Length: 77
Image (cartoon, rainbow, N blue to C red; front, side):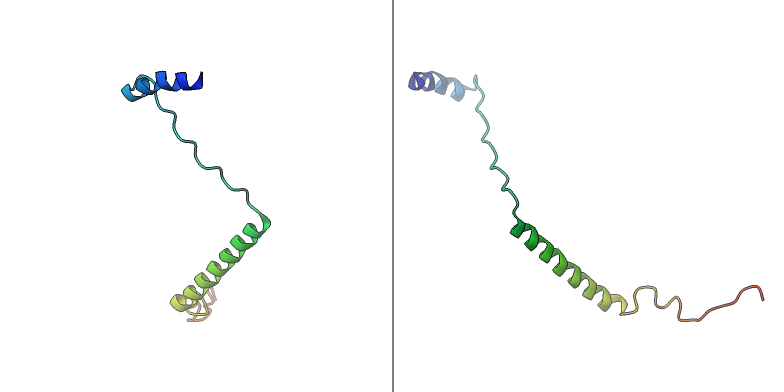
């Protein structure tokens, strides 16, 4: 019975009267604790690299180090 159905529907699909069924996407793998631990370690490594790059660009004192270098000004007296 299944063979007969395929023989009948094959030409109809070729002509375009019966749409072809799309392929199902692959299932998403379930996360594990090891995967989560590895993702956290990669995020930490990226943060350390970003911090190191920020120190190279702005210096160890940070981006606003030059603003306070002039000193305090007392206004009003």
